[in-house]
Amino acid sequence: MKKELLIAFAVLISNFGFAQTTATNFNCNDCAGVSHDLFSELNAGKVIVICWVMPCAACISPSRTAYDAVQSYATSNPGRVVFYLADDYADTPCNTLTSWGNINAMPNAIKFSNSAVNPADYGTVGMPKIIVLGSASHTVYYNENNGANPAGIHPAINQALAVSGIDENNNIVSELNIFPNTIKNKATLVYNLNQANSVCIEIIDITGKIIKIFSFANQTQGKHETQIDFENCSDGLYFLKFYSGGISKVVKFFISH
Image (cartoon, rainbow, N blue to C red; front, side, top):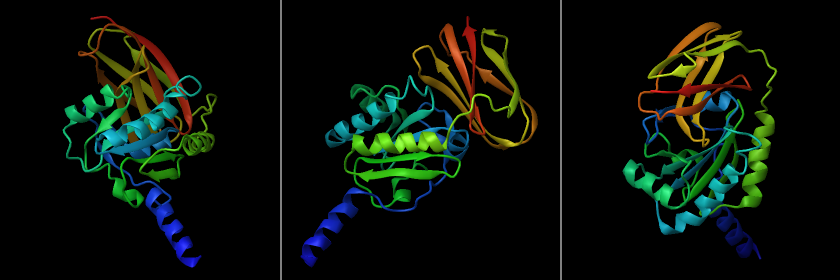
């Protein structure tokens, strides 16, 4: 009996990456060249699901399970639950990883092949490795190796959303404007923080795809301006989503070259 219990415990350890209960920060570019600061995005109220893959055939089904779980929140919590698809050892070229994700029906995944996004930060590594992160305390709500369990992922995301709750009436930002509102190539974003805080800004197209993201850690109280380049963006309607201090605000704008 004792031997059987030891075997069962060893199997459990191999499936779940018991390690630290808080995230490890990283600041790096994704495969699209967009910069991400993990803690800034968590501080701003986002829930992030990271799935590391080799990539390989065995990774497809569990990765899709986690990806589909994230997409199920697209209507109820638009832009708040984000899926990162990361190469395990950062030795797969970005174009290969991007193609693999798109072919396997994960087009909205944000792809990383960067050693800063390290699965070993979260214990043992088995592909795919999937974690759920959330809240300003940078908590790990789910950590699993070699598979994905929808019955575990959904409650973990729900818990992270509850702790990272967005209050649309919070007055941490008293001004939020992008001008000109119909943009040709470049625009200026102006916002006023009523208190020092981290800020995350997303540019989202009409399909819901995040095309640009800006993360700023520990911005000071007061007025801030950010220049944004839209020269390579198609004409049409876009949304700017602003996160800070557990609040989110949205501004619509148009691009017309």
